[in-house]
Length: 120
Image 1: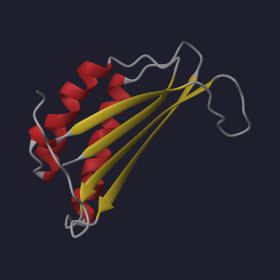
Image 2: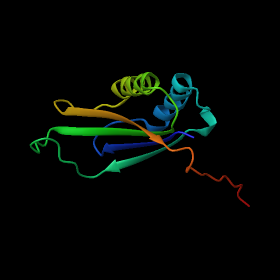
Image 3: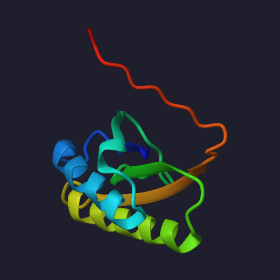
Image 4: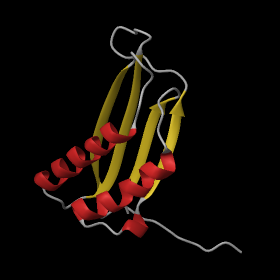
C-alpha cells in the first residue's frame, strides 16, 4: 500500500533503482508493510527555489503515504529511517548544499481504494 514519491533536483545523483530496492524492504521492516505493496515514483525537478534562491542548493523531498492506524512513534521511526537512507543515497555536486526532507502522510483507510489488473 505505501505510495512513495521522490522529487529531486535534476543535478542530484541518485541511483533510483538501487534506492527503491533498499527503500521498500526498509518500509516493510519499520511499519510492517508488505514489500510487494510498496510503489515508488521518482520525479526530476527541473527548477527549485530554496531559501534566498542561491544557486548552490539542491533538494530531495520524499513523501510516503501510508494507511492510518500507526502510532506517532512508528511514523517517526519511519521518517527517521527514510531520511537516513536519503542521506546515504543522494549526492550533490561538490560545494552544493543538499536539502533533504521526508513527510509521512496518513491516508484514511475508510476511503482509500485500489485496483490491480493483469495486462492482456
